[in-house]
Image (cartoon, rainbow, N blue to C red; front, side, top):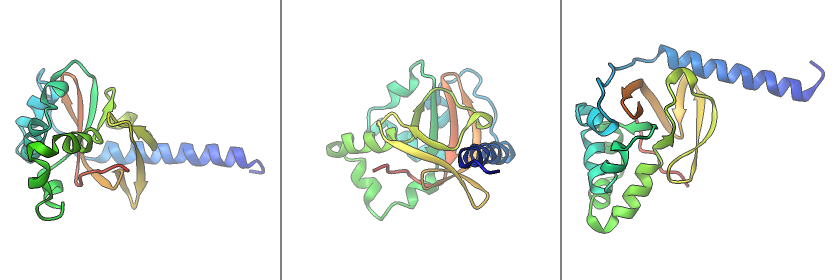
Length: 168
């Protein structure tokens, strides 16, 4: 190919195909049976820390709303990766705004199933961009690896991730 623009278009198309292929191979969890994102997360023991954090940040009601939302949900192990004392500090009422901002980094407007995820930056509810990428055969949301996809809820979808994402 002699045209650099054509090379770029082909490279982007290949990247999108790679992301979709990898996401399609990841484990999925059963549908929610009409439950909203908070109820689905509350029913999954891997998200108990996230649910506690959502309550502390006063975000439960928002994520019970009509949406739709796509939540890149940190599992309990993701919260354990934070430096010692960080989570306890964030859960204090005085830090509610900071915790809410961090949690909003994990929520994107619209319901995006794994097969429809595209590589590139996505704007979170916090107004920050987080990059979806393929690296080393893994799909990443910022610095987090997506470990399970398409956990459906009545008002959106959850994709499980292994790291808490703090966007700049």
